[in-house]
Length: 348
Image (cartoon, rainbow, N blue to C red; front, side, top):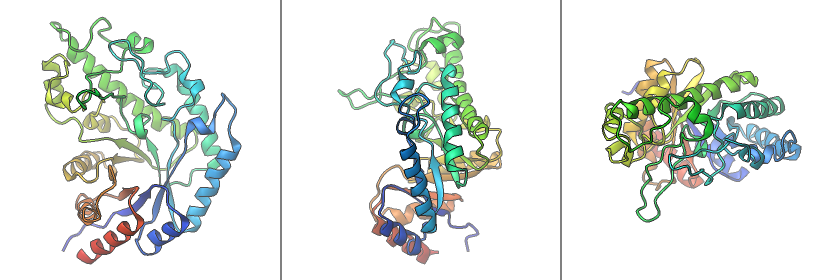
């Protein structure tokens, strides 16, 4: 008989109140994600959209009345245009091209802009309070802990881009005259990659500290995307001078900074949750769970996409096997979720 406990079931997506009632009362869901957008909340510097904040507060109150606890996304990764227009607020790759495909601000290297996000967070928690099961941390695309990435439209594959060449980044770069793909006779590739990955880990910890400074005392869930770098991947990438031909670079794990081992090891706050974004992949969630256990931290995960109804019971079983504290189902048909939870409960 298994000694593991079924994880809390969380919901991500836009559902009617009727669906939310069914998901809670029949499907057993007890947590729901509420998401904000910095751009919508503060469309002009220092001028907050109070109507938007009121609507968020009302939605939280409604969901609580339906029996849910609330996981929360502050939306720092969706920066207002006035932030993104500031010098150095956008990421720049090794070719000098500025990343504008989505609105995440460059707060990894643009530390001079961080106070703007800190001020926004104080406004959010002052207005909404801190009664959340978790507050999500990542700051990159989709709110995950990541550098930007671009796909080559001709091949459908990720381009070999390292986003650490803006003015601020160059000031701390240990090899400012070296670029990925160039020879590194003096170990430039290794020095660059270590600095690049450490910078993202530091950004992670700043985000957690910013939540605390804003008054939030609860659980901060850091979103670790994809499969991630594993043992030996650092060395493989360095051996080819970060030219994009090593296996972890071909998959984009290195360029996007997916070094969960390094990042989780750097955590110091005891109320952090390790949160995976690929719950369907048991190898990934069990790997993250092992890293979290070593730090005496809990693990949660969300599904990466809408699944077929047939997939869901297996994913739920795997979440329990990995001893996840919570499993979040993303944008799934409500009926599918209810049926899957029934099948999963019947199998236990």
